[in-house]
Image (cartoon, rainbow, N blue to C red; front, side, top):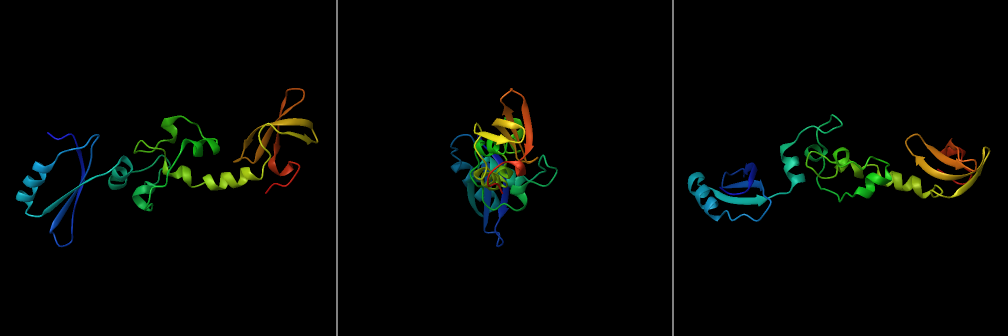
Length: 171
């Protein structure tokens, strides 16, 4: 009757200790459970509370990309992830689209974040006015995947041009 969810149990190679991994919303007093398990299994018992990302790592699964979960295959540490990362990559801020199986922000948001930051560092800021062959316009938005910038011209129409065609130093 404990308010905890058992995720997995690992035994040491010498079968002297069993490590029980569990999740729980609150602190759990499992001392009587440990005594009972030690008596039945005749091994030392260790209880480890883990978070949602660790739970998903232990259970595994397939991500929205169709590949095995990054956390279950190759990630060894969980980097801090923020909504700002999704925002800078111009992703939908819909929690259903940027959350992983664990219910937290997807780990893969960190993969391209540094690249997006580097590209943006060399671009003029949104709101800046630029002179182009089409005339003078104000930068409204970037589409870094398509490598374009949208300008609002003086006559209120929007013009999309390639990043490579912007005046000034871009890389």
